[in-house]
Image 1 (cartoon, rainbow, N blue to C red):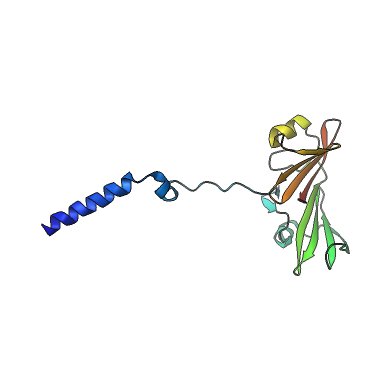
Image 2 (image 1 turned 30 degrees about the horizontal axis):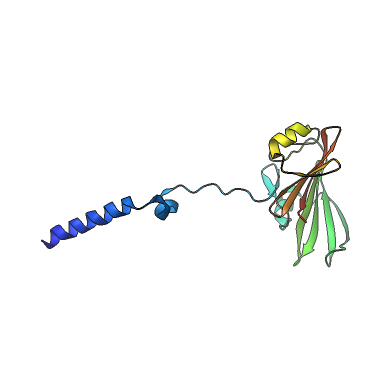
Length: 167
């Protein structure tokens, strides 16, 4: 009798577990969803460069580039610009590290992750990023999290692209 009750108890437990709504076991049963990117990042040859992050990992791949330094007006230490053929990375000092403050695309040889580059049309930019922008003159500013991606246009074409820390 005890053996029969044990099996019935196990069967009831399994049936109850299967009958519970998915919301209880949703995280367990559902595959994990890909985390949506919450910042605008620049990617160059599989190297992701993020604003407000230490620039050292990127420099390990990119090299130093042409370096320009000046006294920081906002922080104690030096602001630094690392200039490469197609883009430049500006940094600011914090806790003995240099963190990325902006990335400025210089040529049509590099693009955003969505494929927008210097020379792209306004329509292509809006198709890639949508209409949720703030516009000042011919600067279209998109904000995601604590980052901002700005497209500077002239005559309906992207003339410059800049990643910045959002205000």
